[in-house]
Figure 1 (cartoon, rainbow, N blue to C red):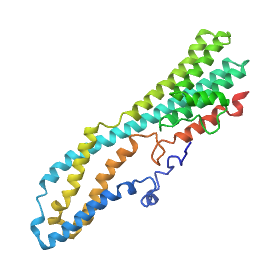
Figure 2: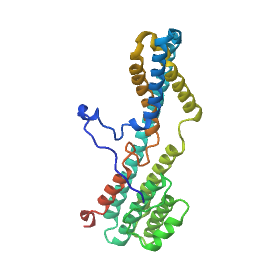
Figure 3: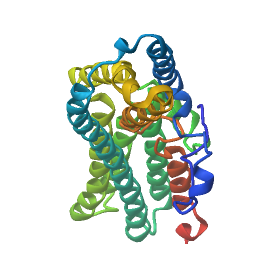
Figure 4: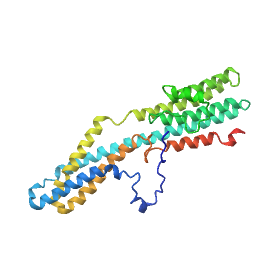
Length: 293
């Protein structure tokens, strides 16, 4: 399984260093578009030097700017909501996994093999869910499941659901052996159900992007606005139109790109959720020596 660096850790108080950061800042992603705006502004400034009639009235841009700002705010807020909902859902997976381990330790003290199976399949579920969200199949880099179990899981159509089904089967088997009561079985099943619900929530985020019409309309407005902006500015700013257009283009195009970057938070980019780290830490928690006493 391909693994890359986690979410960028940073101090929110270090303004000076952030001003020069490139990694994760999306400068490279928007450089081409901002460059086109800047070059357009340069040509307009040169043309205005010889033919002042290339300038246009700036009133339409002033009026459109307010509507464009509202669209960008909605775009960013929607993407931010998706990002934090994804983090909340993964927090739910972590909590349910820990609760499942805690209940197994307390309610199955004389059945360590069942507890181990529950832990192993819980760990497998989290790694399988993480891989599923990037269209991969994996049970983690160090799964403790047998080779046959791993092969059957990977061969299944939906690996996380298969792992959840195995957890349910283990719990049901413990009930048949009278190791658990009906109420205790329901307690265990509630945690498995919660993890599956979180999986469904993450799939909803991943499979439901921003409506196509909204994304296309916003980008068309951005292209038209930034592309014609130098013509509206050149009469007031002259040669400074190049710098002003660069700054405005960087701000507006950057805001739209941030929304695009964070609306699907389950990948392996610098600004995505650190899901590999979450899975690794959860595995360490569940397999910690103090849990085996």
